[in-house]
Image (cartoon, rainbow, N blue to C red; front, side, top):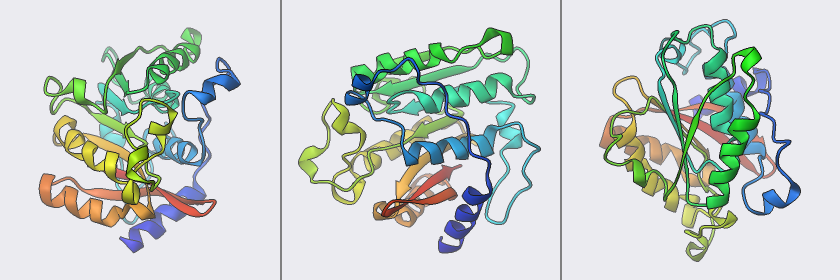
Length: 257
């Protein structure tokens, strides 16, 4: 796993920074209600751009896998805990303009969040980044719920791509589980309380065998332990995609297939 982390660091250093979807519709007071995009968001966007951007298809790098075959067939995406909605909006924009997207295939984008302000703002972000002249048109379905609970069991094994930037910061357990902005970062002991609850849901929702999920971790989350658990219990492979140091921690975007 250490070798794969090194490859992910190299990949992050060499990639072209992804453009952030417009958030001009938000005011400063909105960031009192939802998580403001930060280093983890930028890393996530870079990873999505590597996976789903229309640059010449990346050759399979050492320790990496090409996603070129999958991107053309993606029909349904889900972001769990959407916050501002920038991740889903960015992915939807990439898929809407991709040369490899199948013509006539309708994309269904879902976002969930336990915070009602995040639901409202995610929809605003999607709407504010539409551009019919450039072919950027998509619809986002927003559901206020705990993780992906309201999608189970009706959407079992039906999601092509899942995005999750969990509350990964190690905190006292009593800070976990609120409906306010604290829910966006408080992860409890090892930063794993919410993530561990979500992993079984991700395993249920992913379409087999070509579904993929992307999740942010920090080293305190013990990602190698997560990888071993997902492989043993669900047969899901976890590989570091991009990795970068931010302040006093290492952030990694893990890819699950």
